Image 1 (cartoon, rainbow, N blue to C red):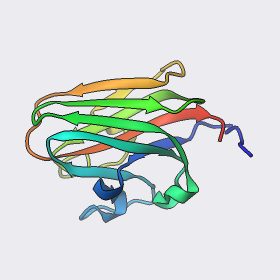
Image 2: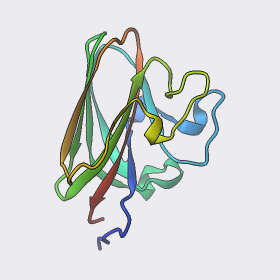
Image 3: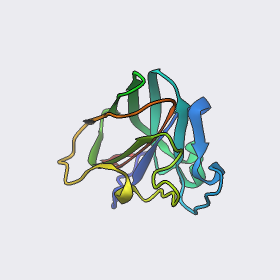
Image 4: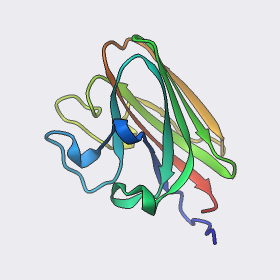
Length: 149
């Protein structure tokens, strides 16, 4: 039986063969769960979006949507798409050549990601265009999601 969450949970995009748990990024350690996805070459990718997957274990979470990434070598089009019954109030995105944002001081704090939107009114999709990229990239996608699960 589904439960309605009293506080909005966070979600992160998970891409199976492209996924690196935050704690497995060289020189980084954190008690927070989540993943970076990459390295990704030119192409189109679809990542599952999980809410509440504590300890980066997708069996503990709920599949709530899909993150689509289209990368042409210089520009990435990134689209969040929620499954039926799920809504976003914030999105936070990093796309770049390092596994995590922050350069020499990597971070997984969503508020420090270079692309963010807040105060969204229960939307079911969101889109970003990230330019100025080259080579292989990494993607960390985060949001606040509402719904029954």
